[in-house]
Image (cartoon, helix red, strand yellow):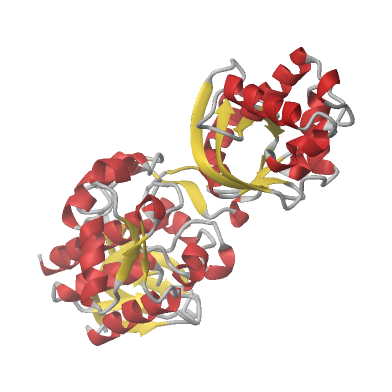
Length: 421
């Protein structure tokens, strides 16, 4: 039996590609090596599934620092607003949360996965699970089908590779698709972890004295070895037994990786601003007044209501201040030093957790070899790509899934069109 479109990979991009291709009248086969579809989607957004982001297209693309501009055409075909309408059309009501993140009102990723899989089934797509692909078959510069690991050959006029990157491998993303692309002559840009926690050998990390400390509404900056600020992100973070994590850290992680590679350095300097809205002078005055108003209290206790308690001993130590002194003995220069540390607490990081532990894979299919209007290979006719296998990566917050749905829809629609021609 021959298919018009064979989609490899039942994640966000593959499901959307199957829907778009079948809607366009193609006979579609969706193949996945796992036992169920949408596994990574099912754990996304902390198990609540952040289906897209409501920001305007230009802002959306700014939040996809890894080649987001490539998505202009795909987003013109199937935008974040179209994604919202699509899910509302499936009966899934959405709500907007902070920073434009869109979630199902049910707060359950399962709602989204079930709706997508049901839509795929209802449109007559043939689904084949537990069927790992061994290779994509090519002949005379075009796709002719796929070969499964059990030896079965399935003929197809077009093949869409939507097999994901190398992050979160327990959901099936183990990087299989890169080799199939290379067989068609494609090059793969270097893979690296993004949206990933950072590791540090700082003494206060090794001692675990800050482990579990969450910081809210801080600003985190990444500096290159020349002392230039490369990026700054606001939000929350947490200290862990190996380093730091949380939304701001994940957003900064790709810049740490790039600096380490560009400058061949073993560590990268970051700084935490505990009060982005306040100046050093504000902090100096506030804390000095607190101590003045409670002259007999030792400064370590004075600072408890103002600063995270776990961080106070470290801040005092770095400012060469004793926590046991009272207001009358405060050395003004050291107090100023303390105020500066509150605005710029340094932490050197030495890398990231592995690509398998990252939320997103950086690198992938070289975009110069893919038509942005159709997602078709420029090297092999009938071969299409979508989702995380492409060299596109965004911040967490609905940006990567938007790229997956948008490229998936574009690939599916154009694969169906190609198969008819």
